[in-house]
Image (cartoon, rainbow, N blue to C red; front, side):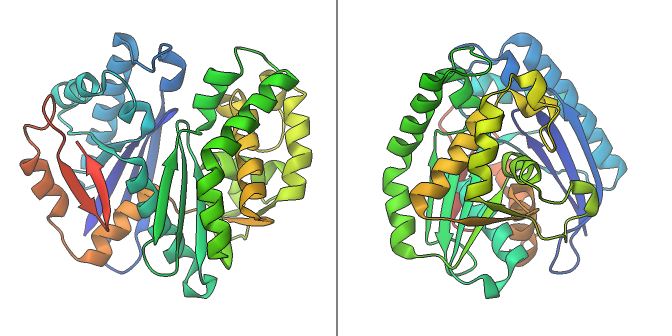
Length: 338
């Protein structure tokens, strides 16, 4: 059977179409529309009329593309850029009305649990007790577990975009006091989570997300064109050196460094601070960068639980959710609000 996922993030709307007849989601088509929604939010995170119209158009386009590839109703969800917007319900209603797609918002804990599932399946059981780090635009997800699903999952407001907007005060490159402010914020928010991870003593540490992928590439990991099966690692010492280089350059020059894209150059310093501080607080010396993340976690939930109708049933059950009380969708022990 062919399935698809539409992922609305801070910078792009992505479509993944995969065959799900076996135990592994095999991608057959991917597409993305670059929107950079994060650049068009106000100080409170509200999305204005223009970016919402662009979002509706992008979702409509990828929905039509999914249909051409044999997926009538992809699993469509949005991360923190929509989830945390004060006008979230208006955005969701606009997408449903204009694109005919019910867009759901996952809680941060749900993202952590589903991403952990993807990392566990990619790394295998030999990875043992596993800790996962995922830096998004609005949040940092951390999860730990010994089995298929995490025993512990947390989502913290430590996304690279969020911290850049809140604490760098438009400085490019940021001044030393702004860097210290970001480090203090990360240490404060992550203190209890880090203590739990140190106590658990994970055998393997894994990172997902574009932020970690780009930082690993900056620190010498193989480029993406070498494919997903090349092992990529990020060690804390190399990241510390790279962080100093990033912090000394304006965004325009950061974008010329290996792995740092123009779209993420502005938030790359904050992302590096979060990554380095999280590794230091949890006692993590080296991370393995995993190519599977949230989208694959959703597909794996569908494949492994053997429930072909779970998303469709929730689509019907939550028909009146927008504008009212959120409903809950349990995904492999996680919760999705619509």
